[in-house]
Image 1 (cartoon, rainbow, N blue to C red):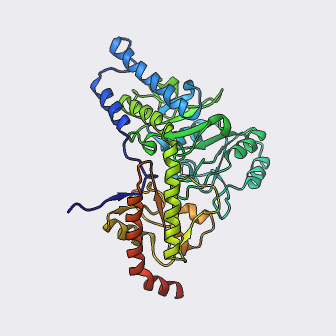
Image 2: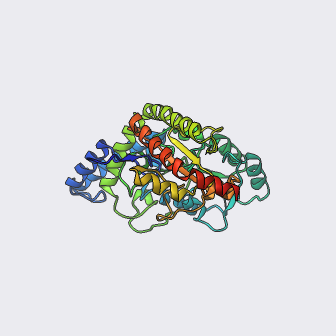
Image 3: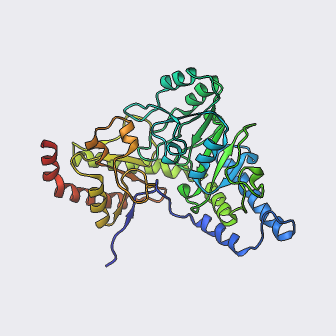
Length: 376
């Protein structure tokens, strides 16, 4: 008998879309370096430039501002390290690739729902006249909380700061528009929206100048040296185009997500849906079960064929307290007992039922131990 397997860790990586797989395969069949001037090189260059236009359409950007890089981490660090700004101001719930890019980055506190404190940002920028870059993500990868990025951009620009927005987790799930956001720089990653891993982009707006971290042949308009990852670029473009037309699937995912949360709370009234009162990505649910470690929950669910995660899947397999939940003021019992369930465009009602069966069975096994731990 085939074992049931349910994948609910889409925020870690999305399954490769058939369109992206076909584009990668086609690019692998062709030979040609996009920097060569002969006909095969020109064909490769055309493929790269076509992809640049398609990725730009995803967020309403100018294709000339699209710089292909190795993924979201490199995009974030190219924005922060290449901006030339003396001050870097980031929210306390940013992805680790932002928080660890610079040790001296100043942090903006967030509310209990994970929303950035605009008043504190205003104070930080007003307190120091040095040129600054502000980095605040569009949507949190752990809780799904959507930040008021247009307001962040307004505050940043009034103080002469650049605004960088990490839209890696949001793109393909909700509409993303660089003009509406008001961002000078936006990070994207292909594998979060059904493209191949190892490819992403930093979208550079207007007259913003970015100094390259990788120097050499001057590719990507001097922003990132090295021969372009042609199969990755082609797959990224195919996924971006498909994702743009699949946004309605995430409205259906939200209905499934909401029913999942309601069922969990009906079974375990002590469970907590993190950030439930704030706008969130339609596919993301962070659920705390006080008294039961996140690691225990993830392992128990995995044994039943259900794949979820504990916080972000970017810490080399480590499971520990989430810096996001800690920044939100969550007590250790909550921060250490929260799992992330993230749905995708193909998630089915049967998969949600499978999760609920596995989660309920796990809950019934651990409930006495959880109650004892809370009482201790």
